Amino acid sequence: MNNTIYITGHKNPDTDSICSALAYANMKNLIGETAIACRLGPLNEESKYVLKRFGLENPLLLKDARSILSDIDIDEPLMVPMDTSVKEAWDKMLSTSNRSLVVVDKRTRIKGIISTSNLSMTRLMLDTDVNGLMAQAKLKKIAQTIEGKVVFDGEEYKTNGKVYIVTLHDREKFQSNFKGSICILSDGEEKQISLIEAGCKLLVITCGQEVSPRVINAARVKQCAIITCESDTMKVAKVINDSYPVSLIMTKNPIFFRHHEYVEDVIKKMSNTRFRSYPVVDDENHVIGQISRYHLQNYKRRRFILVDHSAKNQSINNIDDAEILEIIDHHHIGNIETTYPIYYRNQKCGCTCTIISMLYQENGLLPDAQYSGILLSAIISDTLHFKSATTTPLDIMTAKWLADRAGVNLEEYALEMLSASVALKDLEPTKILNRDLKTYDIGKYKLAIGQTNYRNIEDIQAILADFRKNLEKEQKAKGYDLVIMMFTHVMAEGTMFVYSGPLSYLMDNVLDTKFDDHSGYSRDIISRKQQLMPKMSALLKEI
Image 1 (cartoon, rainbow, N blue to C red):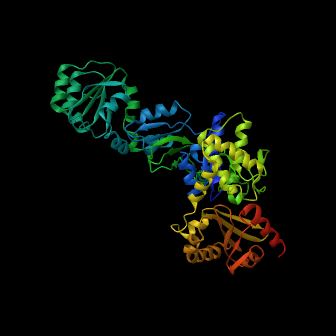
Image 2: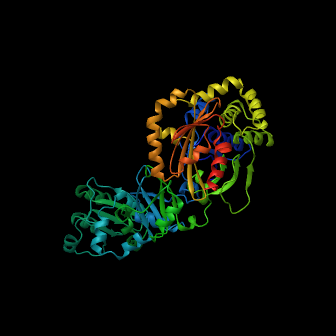
Image 3: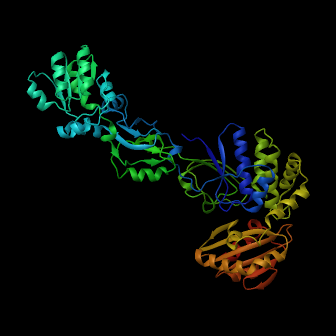
């Protein structure tokens, strides 16, 4: 069973979303819980820079909150090789509660299924069909099945699969009946030699009888194999026809599931079948377990902690199918619902990583230099080096403390980091828009707002024509009433706006300077959350 806690930020992750997931996962691991930091999309240039600067790996890319088969308890697989005899399969199956075995090759890759139905059907076969199966039984498997030993194997061992219990003494009948067959008998040297001369290909000598040198010599001449065993003739006769391999009667191309399939999808597929148990395989078809309907009843769902968001449209897909343990956020309270109380930390400050830094201390821990570095980076990013209206004294105090722990000069590092994300000319317009795009449903209206940094206005001018075309295309394709892109100066000296949609006229109430019907500038608005969204919400209520 998977007890991992997945910690994830929002879609189109920014530096705060990435760093808060990483730092909080580290803290959880330090206090003895198993946590993995996740991301819901590609890293932006700033986040890449931060992680490389402090030597940390990218969070795990996760796109769906639903549980997969590898998350839940399943049975250990009951596997048998392809050359397993029918008797061995019966013995193994009857010793367990499972009524099916997975037939595998030497590398444990699935080849088929052998079930009680497969085994039972052999009892209803015509004699000619059973003979055909026994003709393919190996000599050693026959000996193993009847608990005997091979006295002489014969270099050219091959039978027609017919099995006889021999009591006759008429040599003419020997000639007509027993050529190429398997003959079971107890004693009688002359009878044994007669059978060999008649073309019998395997003698099974029962009741612990010794085989004379004369019989062995005759067998060598005619290449007739000999097996001896302690059991009586009737006991041997009951089991000998279970010597052939299960690969001959197994269900080929069986229904199986891969370890990464979603549990809900598996439940739907199972509802259309009637088997008791199904193999589970990895990506290379190696069998790793078996699953039944029992395992899918009240299975434990994946567990999540959400950071830097609490809105369903910004969260991982199918979050309603997961168990939410905590939410750590500094935005408005969103629309994610839970069925029971959880730990919810929502605090007015400029950055989620400010809250995470406090949680370290509240748990008696201190972040090391690496994690202090990424916590600091997120605060600088979200507050635009304390120029954003969202900045609080707590953000500034925490950033100074983290800079000391990370061993960096706060002012120098802030300029260095913020400049890392301003390369616009080499990026496609779609990537610029979507690398930090958030959507909002306000009443009946649907808005999307993206934001990125720039250092020189010439960088924006170089891409503006293509960017405008792409922005209009995205707005129409996704049905936004208004899509806005904020190009904010790295040192918070203002924001250039490019926008498209039926509600574009609302931007007249936002801009200081209007360039045309789809672009303009504001020297004061640098925060999407604290400055632009409140204005847009108020304007939409007046429509």
